Image (tube, rainbow, N blue to C red):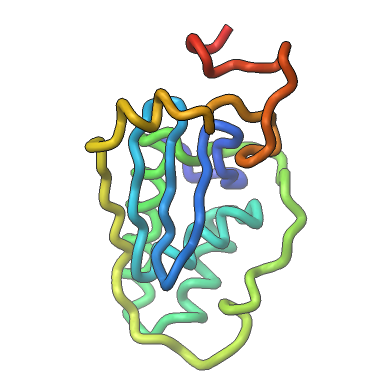
Length: 156
């Protein structure tokens, strides 16, 4: 897997929401959803800014009180897993110009807990049938125009 370049969320196939310290990620292409917790939430927020591996690991080491080599190793492992699951892509072009999330820029060091990514397929059939798939490139909840549907019967 590639960790060189800039990380980006695999939109529009992937949607996400962070609630109470947990990021729920849904892959609309295959109906699998994920729970991302602990330091993984901050890594996801950095991916959303279009950061590269060095930017992500530097921000994580600055944010967390833990062994830098463990933080770097765990971050790398999570980034590889996110790519393998089709949730993020790596690009040579930085697509987002967002700043580092405010929560990562402010406050003291946090106690380090390795990222935790859990995968669920129990709602796969339901998610694949849901009209959320009829969205445009802006993602949910923006409904696609009639000629722009890609998800109804697969890409086409």
